[in-house]
Length: 618
Image 1: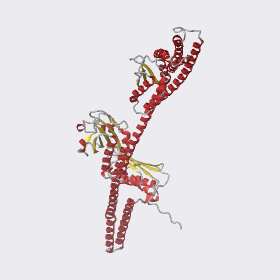
Image 2 (image 1 turned 30 degrees about the horizontal axis):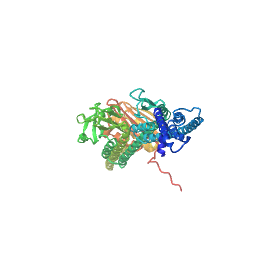
Image 3 (image 1 turned 120 degrees about the vertical axis):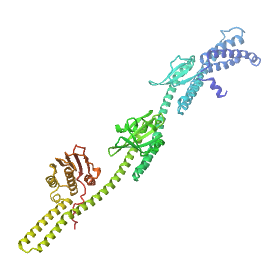
Image 4 (image 1 turned 180 degrees about the horizontal axis):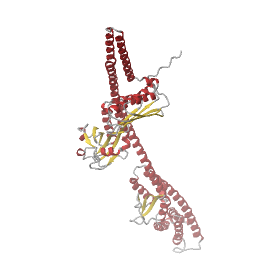
C-alpha cells in the first residue's frame, strides 16, 4: 500500500463509529462469501485467515474496540457458515476459541499500532498546522486579512466545516456556531467559531492543542504588528528629522554667510511650507501702531501685499500671538486662522503662529496656514521653532550691522564736532585774548610815563591769566586732569560742585578703575548733568555709582520734565556708543513729566587701550 493510503487509514480523527460498524459488517459478509469459491482450491482452517483482513482494517481505522468486535463477528460467521454443523454453532470446538484468540490478538496489536500511528499523525498534523498558521499570521502586515486562510487550515486539519476566526469578542450561542474566546491574559484576542456538533475527539484536540497555539500566534502577530508600527514610525521620524535638519542647514548657511534678511525670510517660508506639507507660510513684523507688516509670504493672495500694513487684532492668528507672546493654533476656523487679512483669507481653515523674539523683544510672527479642514501636524510648532530662531538671528545680525554702521558714523561725526568745538573755543576765547594782549602791548609802546607802562602791563597780565583759565577749561573738556590724578570719585565730586543743579551723590567705589572705564563713566555723568540743567529743568539730580561683581553700575535720576529721546541725535547717543564699545549697555527711561532715569553697566575687566605698556625686559 502507498504511504498516502496508510496515512489516511490512521488519520488523527477516525470516521464515525456507525460507518465503522457498517464497514465491519460488509467486510465479514464479503469474507464469508469469498471462502466458498476458495474451498475448491484448498481445504482446512487456513481459510479462516481471510477474516484477518477485515480485522486488521477495522482495527487500524476505528481502533481496538471495534476491531475486537469484528474479530468476534468473524469467528462466529466462520463457525456458522463453514464449520460443521453448517448453519450451526460448535461452541465446544476449541478451534473456534483458538481462532478467536488469534483474531483478538491481531486486533489488539493492530489497534495499538494504529493508535500509536494515529497519535504520531495527530502530533505531526498539529505541528504542520501550527507551522502553517505561523506562516500565515506572522508573515503579513494585515492579520485580519490572513484569518480566513487560517480558519480554512484549521477546518481542513480537523475535518470541520464552517470554521471562522474573528478579531471581535463574540459570546457563545450567537448564530449557528459555537464560540471559543481567544485570550492573552485579560486581553481579548478574538473568537474561534466552529460548528456546534463536532465530535468529542475533535473538540478535545481543538481545546487542548489548536486554541493554545492559535492564541500564542495571535499574541505574537499583535506584538509583531506593534513592533513594525514602532519601526515604521521610527523610520518616518528619522526621515522627517533628516529633512528638517537639511532645511535648517540651508537656512543656517544663509545666516552664517551674512545674507540679507529678505533672502533668509524667503528661504524660511519655502522650507517651512515644504517641511510641513502645508499650504502657505507668511512672516509678519509687528509695528508700534498695533499693525503687522507682511515681510515675506508664498501665499498667492498676499504676495502683492508684501511690505503693506494690516491690523493685528485678536480676530486673527497674528493678534493672538502678539497678545500672549506665545505660539498659537487655530484649527477648522472660518476667520481667526487668517494671518491678518480677513477679506483675503476666508479660505484659510487651519493655522499656527510662532513668535519671533529678537533679543527678548517680540519682533514678529511666522504663520503657517492651510486651506484643508484637517488640523496641522500636532508637532508643527516644535518642528518650525528652530526656523524662527534662525530668522531672529538673521534679524539681529542685520540690526547689529546697521547699528555698527550708524555707530561708526556717529563716532566720525562726534570727532568732527569735537574738533569744530575746540576750534571755536580757541577762536572765540584764546585767539581773541591774544589779539587783545597784542593791542595792549602796542599801546604800552606809546606810553610816556612809568605809571602808564605799569598799568598796561597789569592789564596784559590779567588778560594772560584769563586766557590761561580758558585754555584750562578747554583742556578739561578734552580730558579732565582731576580724573587722571585723582580718579573717578574726586572727578564726580568736582562735577557735582560745578553743577548748576543740586546733586546727591552715593558713590561706593573702593578702588581705581581703568582709565577708559573712568572716562566713560565721567562723561555719562557730565552729559546727564548738562541735560538736567539745560533741557530737563530739574531741581535735583541723584547719582549712584557702585561695583557689582565685575561691573560698574551707574544710576542717574532727575526730577525734570522728562521726554528725552536718544534717537533724535542727542549727546546721550554718543555716550551709549562709548558704553557699548566697552562691552556694557545703557538704558534710558524718560516719560513725559516723570523725570529721566539713566542706567549704565560697564564691565571693569578688559584691556585698557590707554594704559602705559610695560617696559621691555632686557
